[in-house]
Length: 89
Image (cartoon, rainbow, N blue to C red; front, side, top):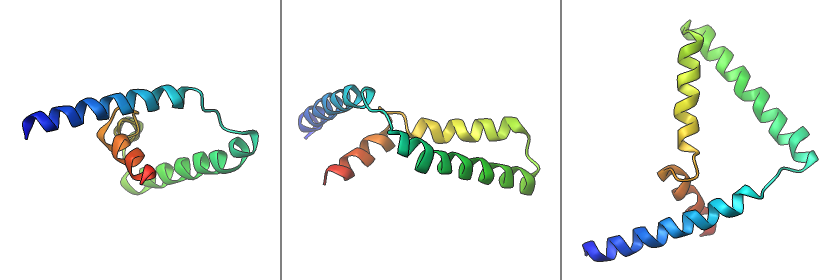
C-alpha cells in the first residue's frame, strides 16, 4: 500500500510540474483584465476594508490574513492540487 502511495505522489508531482509550466504562459485577455479581474480586486479590497472596520484590526493583520489565503493558491499547495484535479473531472 505504501509503495502505491509513493507512485501516486510521484505522478501527482509530475502532473503539478507540468501544470505549473502551462500556467506560466497564461495571460488574461484585456476584457478579463477590465472585467472580472478588476471587479474581483475591488470586491476583495472592499471586503478587507469592512473586515478592518468591524474588527478594528491593524493593517498587519490584513496583510497576514491575505498571506494565508495566498499560500492556498500557490501552484504546489494541496489546495491548488485538489482544485485542479476537480476541474479535470
